Each structure stands twice: as C-alpha cells, then as structure tokens.
Image (cartoon, rainbow, N blue to C red; front, side):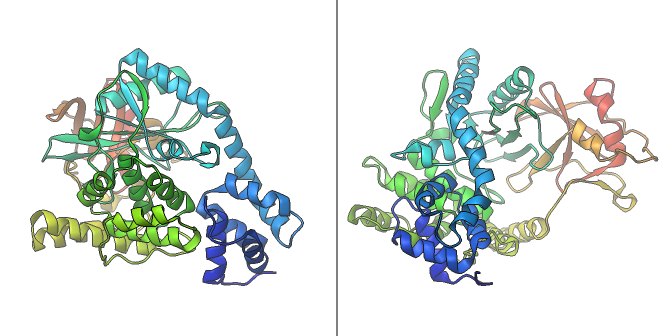
Amino acid sequence: MGTESPTPDDLAALRSLSSLQPLYGIERSLTAIASMGALEAARFLETLRMRTLVMSRLAPYEDRPGVRGCMAAMRPKTDSLKRMHKVLDANLEMLERIARDAGLEFFAIKGLGARATYRDPGVRDFSDLDVFVRTRSDASVLVRALRTEHGYQYLKAELPWIKYDPSENLVYGQFPLVAPDGAEDLLNVDIHFGDYSVRHSSRIGLTPRLPAGEPGIHVLAPEENLACVVNNAAGDYFVTAKDTNDLLMALSLPEFDVPRFAARLRQAGLEGFLGFIVAGLRAGTALTAAQEERLRALPAVRTLEPVPNPREPHWERRCLGTTVHAFGEGRRRGGLVGAVRLAADAYGYYRNRLSLSVAGPADGGSAEPFALNPWTCVRLVPVDIAEDLLAGRPDRPNPATPGPAKALRADRGIQRLDTPYGQYVRIEDETFLATVDYRLPGELIAGARAVAAGRG
C-alpha cells in the first residue's frame, strides 16, 4: 500500500536502516517500508546509497510486508555493486602499476578514501574510482595510459573541464573516464588534478597537504578526504547515508585531527553545509559519548543556504545554495560588489540544466576566447562526442579554420586555437572543443577532425 508523502519519522527510520549505528530497531524500519510501499521505500533507500548494507539487513525479513518488493527493486544496482566490489583490488593494482611505471603518486579519494576508515570496507559502496594527482601533466599521463592500454573513453554526460586560479597560477580540473563497453572487469575512473574544486569558485586546498612518498597509489589522509566528501554532498545538494557514515567513521578514528579538517572546510566555505550532514547523522544514528564529543568540536556556523530536501536532490535548492555560497566567498575575498557579481554569475549558470547542443544561427558571430578563472568552468568536448551532435544533419556547416596555437602561460601543455566561432583546446596529444554554456557552433564541430589530425 503506502502513502503518497512519507512522514519524517518513516524517512528517519530508513536513514537508520542505512546507518552503521542504527538509531532505531529493525522493526521500526520494516514498518516504514510497509507504510511507504515497496517501490517508494526502495527509491528512497537508493538515494541514500548504502545498498549493500541495507540488502544484508533486510535479507532475513523478506517475508515481511513490502520487503520482498523493496529488495527486488534494489537488486539490479546491488548486483552491479557486487561486481564492482569483486574487481576493485584488480583495478587498484592496475592504477598502482601505472603510477609506478610513470614514477608518480596517485591518491585515492572520496569513496576509496572513506573505505579505509570503515571497520568493514565491503559495506561502503562506490560508483567509480576517484583519483587525485598533483598536476595536469600527471593527470594526462594517467589518461593516456587508461585510454591507450585499456580502451577507456570520455562520456558525454560528464565532460572533462579545467579552471584556473591566478592567485596561485594553478590549473585544476577533472578528467572523468568510463570503461569500454563489455569490459566487466574494469571500473570507471574519475581523475582530479591540481586541486579539488568547490561549487562555483572555491577550492579545498589539497595539493599543499599531500605527503611526499614513493610512486604508487596512496589513500588521502582522512581529514582532507572527509572535506572532499562534504564538498561532494554540497555539490549534489543532498545528504546521503554514505555521507553521514563517512563522517561517523572518520570521527571515530582516534587520530582524526579535527582542527586540520576544520581548516579545509573554512578555506572552502563549507562549514554551513557540514551542519546539514551532522543533522542527517543525528536523524538516523545512535552516537557514542566519544562521537558526540567529536561532533561538538566541529566548526558550527549559521548559514543562509536552504536546508537540502530530505527525500531527494532538488535542483532549485542546489542553485540557491550555490548562489548563497558564491556570495559569501566573494564577500570574504573582495567586498560587496565582487560578491554580488560572483553570486549573479553562479545563479546565471546553475539556474538551468545544461546539455550539450549545437548553437543556432542566433548564437553565431565572433566568439570571445574563454576566460580562465576560478568561476569559469571550461568544458572540454572530445571530437567524437562533438561530431555526434551533427549526425544526420543534411546541411553540414563549413569548417572553422583556427589561428596558430597559443600555449597557456600557466601550463605549456595546454594550447588554445582560436577561430571566429570558438576555440579548440589541445592537451598534450588530444584535441577538444571548448565550451562554457554547453553550446557548440556547427562550424567549430565541422573543423574539429582536421584540427585533431594536425591539418587545421
């Protein structure tokens, strides 16, 4: 049966079911499943992202009302997670080999970093392998190895991107890669470099805190990793049980350095959103006295950011929260006028869901070179993904002809090629089309293949 609108108590009972230290007994969680209905309960439990743990707890109660249907709805993703857990070690060995062969250090972050704090890492699910490296050139080494040796590909739904912070002459960004179709033994790899970006225009400040060590893959320190977890939740604008459990496990480490963690949050302006995660933790978790003491030591600040939707990610709240955060960060850096401009820029970017498309005739004209700064995210569209946008169109545009390549002063391995319609970007031996608003002129797409072949 099930209600149309779950009660807060039912939602809290399912958060408890997803907690490593449940606040409520299993009977209360089973009652919530029966009250909400199998499919609605499964949908909410899936948003909490602790599927392996939840399925193991529900297994003895499959004959109870709604439980069998709830488990059936969750099983496809849970089966996929079982495979991911099974092949994880082999994938880490692959990354270790690449790092050692290149003489580089890779750092396992986010889910991979959080797993190291769990007493049973097998209950900490993950969606891909998040890896952090110090520089863009280090990232390109890993990208090249994964693409040439293992067939990894770029994904239209999550494009590579770069930003630039002139205060430290720092290029930072991300290269998300997906395993090739049919490669069941390979996991997706998300490569972060330079620093970990925070919302519209801030950074965590990771690189200066990385220890020097031997080549290979290392786990990021729990203080910095938990800051990344908080940032990821703030970016999604939703608090999952993975987030609250990661917080719980990190704070349970005797050696966890609260001031060090707090410093990362303050640099990024994330203290306010941490409060939402703490509230989510308390809603479903039975805390020990020691854990309560650690929680009270965390930075607690009032925030004007809206409270996240308790049931699911909410786009409008995400936009508003990101805008408020941008205003606060702008005010901290340079006064009221700069804060208003930064907030307006954030609102203008996040108010709509953007998807890659071909720019229409009204969008034509001379395209200004993209700006490189902390608040402009330059998306890099691979040539094959861009060309798919023109597939089936009878009127193929005339190809754009670029001018000479111009290397970025901050990173000579990145070159920009300007045309009247936009820019191409070469990073080492790969060519991309640059966009900020996810629109690409047809002329820029039509000329991309020749530029990639070195004929442009």
